[in-house]
Length: 210
Image (cartoon, rainbow, N blue to C red):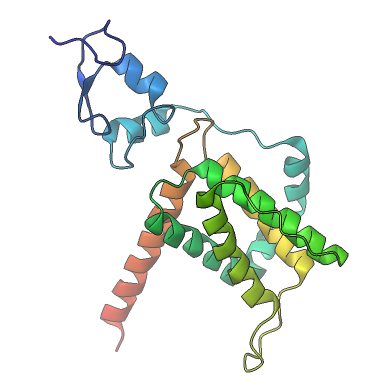
């Protein structure tokens, strides 16, 4: 049996779709989403996520901040939460190289930006990478629309303080639903699966509608 091309030590038993060749199980497990850019469809990746308990740990300040959020909060802000998650999915479709880390850092940057807006001294905390800047602007435009709605729309505009709470909540959700690997897309895959399920439910509803 051929040797693993990554370590040159162990037998290559697992087919790696990212490397388009067989590698050993040890390299698969230890280098997955680290220096191997695993496709979401890889069954070894999916099995590993189900088996492993590796999760990012939110910082204590973020952990404390989300304690005030309950079901009433998520129900009240469902339209905004859904819109943000859909926007992230759309950005991922346009930029397939996006990682969970990018999303989490953009949410943090946008939170800092909103906090400056609430203080009366507006300053955009732009991310450094081009990938993150694109997502930042997409989400910023979305929140601008909720905060300053069009005159013909009668819905109450979103308060800046509520926008900050929503971003804090989403940062926490993204953090705990990801893992510590630098190339993780676990949270992004979760969002995609939820979006696909919602789309299927809507299609089913349209089929049975009178």
